[in-house]
Image (cartoon, rainbow, N blue to C red):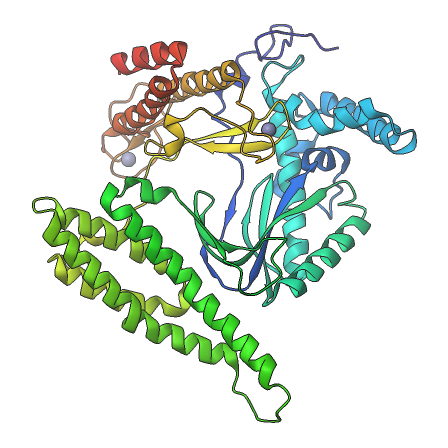
Length: 499
Ligand SMILES: [Zn+2]
Ligand SMILES: [Zn+2]
C-alpha cells in the first residue's frame, strides 16, 4: 500500500522517512572523450531510455558488474513499487501498440518527467535512483553496441550520444547511421529506444558538452561552393577578456576549417584525375603533413602577431590578457592529437612574448573548477530533457531560461526551477553538516565519536573544506540574484551568513 504525499518525500508511515533526504544530488553519468574529430560525426538524440530501462528485466548475464545486482533485489524498499510501475508501463506499451491508444502513448512519453519531478504524486527519490541505475545499464549496453559496430563514442549521456562514424563523406555516414539504427531496432533489448539523428558534423572539435565547435552539415547543402556553417560554442571563452574573444573564435574556426577545406579540395582533385592511371599517394597522409606544417607557417605567425598587438595595445593589462588568450587557444588546439607537439612548440614561443616560462603554473590552462549543473530540466511543452550548466560566468545566467529545442523555445517553469535549486541548496547544506572528518596524516575517516586525535596522532579536518562549500553556495546565490529567485536568495544568503 502506498500513500500520496505532497512534499516530494514518500509517506512510508513514519518509517525511515528521514533517510531518503541524506543522499547527495543525483550524479548522472556522462561519457566524454575529447579530441578533434575530422571525419563525419553524428549527434543522436535518445528518446524513451527510461521506458526501455523500465521494461528490461535484467537477468544475470545482462547485468554489468555483479556488485550492482544487490541494488535490484528484494532488500530495496521500493522494489515492489518499481515492479508495479513496470507492470503499468508494460500495459501502456501493449495498449499503445495494439489499439493505438493515445493516452497510453502520452504516458510513455512523460514517464521520466514523472519520475524526476518532486511534485508528482507518489514521488520517491529512491525510485528515481533505481530507475537511473537501470538506465545506466541500458546506456552502457547501447554504447557497447555502438562500439562493436565500429564507431567511436565522443559523448554520451541520458539524452544524447555523439558518434564518430569514421566515414569521410556525408552520404556514407548517413547510410552507416541508418543501417546502425535499423539493426538496433531489430534487437529486442533496444526495441523501445528511439534514436533520432539531429545533427551531422563534417568536423568536430570537442572538449566537453559545453565547449565544442564544428562544421555543421546542412540538409539542403547541395553544391560544394555554398558557404559552410561553423558553430562555435565555447563556454571557456566567456572568461576571456572581451577584446580577445573574437581572436579566439577566429583562430579556432580556422583550425577547424582549413584542414577540412584542404581534404575537400584533395578529394575533388582526385575525383577529376581518377581517369588517369597515375598512382596517387594516400591523401590522408598528405593532408596530415600539410596541416602539421601549417601550424608553424600559418597559426603560429598569426598568433604571434595578435599577441604582440595585444601586449602593445592595452598597456597595463596587456600581458595578462595575452596570457589568457594563449592558454585558451592552445588548450583548444591541443585537442587534436595529431598536431600536439607542434602546438606545444607554438605555445612555448608565444609564452616567450609575455615572459612566462612554459611549465610555470600560471601558464597552465584550467577549466573553471566549480561545476554546477542542474540536472533533468524537462520542458513541459515539448518534453525535451537536458542538464543546464549554471557556472558563474556562463552567459545563461543573464538571460531568461528557455527550452533549447529550436522549434520550441518556451520558457521553463520558473517556480519549478527555483524549487529544485532550493532543494539542492538544502541538500548541500545538510551534506555539509553531516560530512565525515578525515585525518590529516593518514587520510582515514574518523571512526570514534569523541576522540580529539586520530589513532596515528594526526588531527582531523573536514572532508569538504569550508571554502569549497562557500564557493558552491555563492554559485547558487549568483543564480538567485540574476534570475530574481527571492526565496532561493533568502535561503542561500542565510546559509552563507551562518558559515
Ligand atoms: Zn521545449
Ligand atoms: Zn590518522
